[in-house]
Length: 288
Image (cartoon, one colour):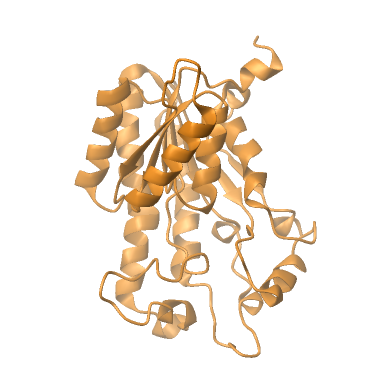
């Protein structure tokens, strides 16, 4: 039995975080590195991933000057891009111990995320009613939020099965558990703002995929769990903050750092008897 600090020690382990330069992804990368893991920051924004890797290496450089963070540009909706990422991880480190699937499209966090280069009116999908929601945007969101996670789990599963162990953490959302309260998105000036249907659909799918994979790897040391955050503050307007906070038992939105403890728990030996689970960190949103 390891001592308590030892349960959370990730020294010698290698992790990949998709969406690693994002709001929560960057926090997860820092947490894994601080716990001792070498971490590959995988993001569609390669420049942002490079900058984060440089910053984390400067902060956590060891006495041996070993790099703790490595960046890699990836489009998780592309099978070939995903395969290149995991081949890179194996070529560089000969192992993969932890995969965190944090990459996802969410127009509330980034209204531009659903638009392809050259497309106009990037904010329109956020304002579209369900009856009028663009099919192309729906399909693109499924490609990233669900198929992308499927592809990454496939690639990680091959490496982890070959080495006999591994941890996969899929990031879901409270909207994968309950329906969005659309009233908190609507204001007097913008009465037709809606959380899109794809978000609940894909995040619920993440929970189903998590349970499927946990059962699929039964009898092995490959564990698969989900982490479900509540609303995390990112420069939201005061009206939204007040509306959201009124629905949370703790009466506020989460700070981005408040998911780190749960992430480390799931990634480490502290949760070694946990698989197929969903760790909810939502300030009580789903407890009502």
